[in-house]
Image (cartoon, rainbow, N blue to C red; front, side, top):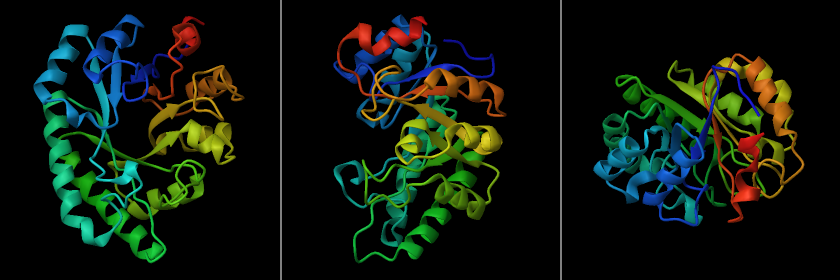
Length: 261
């Protein structure tokens, strides 16, 4: 499996090698030939510890998420609720500390979950405003900001799910330093036309991630034609990395065989 020089595979250490402590996953990624990694939320490790691991194993940290509060535990998160604006700005400051010290290229702004009493339009406006804030803040350090749609099966209460909604947020944000994060797994679960969207919107995409469907496993574990999708990425105007963000089984032959193709 190959990519053009403009695209390369990186390892998401939050899901790959998850049988190991996070601090041990850098070595595992390097052993599989990855030259760069991403970590959803690196904050359990100190900046110095991460920096030491990156140096020791010759890796670069490409992407992290801005802290999202209780989002992954089913809570509201920080970025789309007006009452959490100050907490979001504090989260940006923490992400900035890590990103600048570790030479991170991209930070991702996850949205939040909605409760029945929430006004969706207000939450969307807040999210767009917060993306603009982050985009302006991180632009000063040359760091790209991204944001992503998450499918409605895995996170039914998430602010937005479809590519059309993500594209609308991109256009309403209207900031040169804010781009879409295209997660192939989430878009496939939503039944999106992945090949067409990658081809048409490559320049507006700030980052790409992938996993097979429906189980969010390694390439070949599900129904997606990921080799064909990778070729579409190569042919597109997208110029960034392609991140492996999938759940592992613990069997190396199943989890990482695609790297040998």
